[in-house]
Length: 397
Image (cartoon, rainbow, N blue to C red):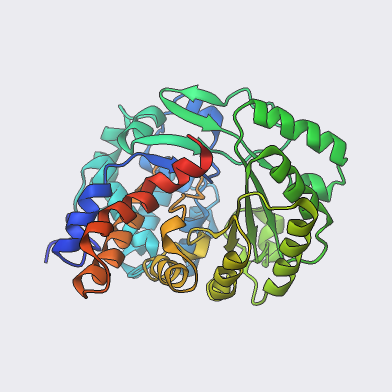
């Protein structure tokens, strides 16, 4: 059997046909952590080690799981040394999304179609770096047909680096969690939200642990309703559980986990309160980090207009995690209105995640068709909506 060939994750001829109809659609990345200045400056990377390992906590976490010393992860070793260590652990990552993404990036960006391991590492290093000499951020975004990028921004960011950049709409997302913690006035935040909207912002984002004190969230829901912008709620995250590592390495370094429990009852009560107060709700997308809560959230989405279950997020963007999200939303809510994939990434090579998702989506739909559970005529239209059309419509692009 061929290794990572064009049939990857496609379970038959129907899946191939559906995938062929969506694989080249543009990308709308409506939640990520990319650096807009690097987009504006068309950053070029010194080597594949920098591209892959400078800030990717997914890879850092995998390396720690395999016993790699921190010097090769966030420490002072060279990117070449770090890359070789990453290559060394790759055969251990069977089933891990990193195994898929890494080899898909090798194929799609560098034209390298072989397994990465300690034997091939030196050769891959040389060939990938040769390609990178003539490849910057502009080229990467063009290669993946990226049309729209919503970065994640502090309310007091100047936004001077956002705009139309080399054919890509780079727009800010209003992310005010830290400001609430610092007790910044609501008046100041409202003024900043207006400024963000004047610069093309269509999305606000709020990350939190659980639905305890909801005063700030209520204010944000009201503002999003008033301004007509999408609100994304990311919740159930247990931050920086390894305090010693946090003290020495810092945040966003791979030491966050998901909560064992969140109160979906409190979310339902919050939505009911705001729906009654405002006479409606803004479009709200909910992302539980612990996907054990997908079913209750899917049912809540059916009780309130404009509430949607988000993409398989963070720890859940695996083969089974994406399938579980598709299955749960289709069975307990409506899959056809879902907004599809996002990267939630700090890496410019991570756009292979859209191809990863589209392959899994094609196979999920194809199974229904092949089993006589879904009509073939609707399959391609549904796939196009989930891969591209729905989010484009919601954002009014």
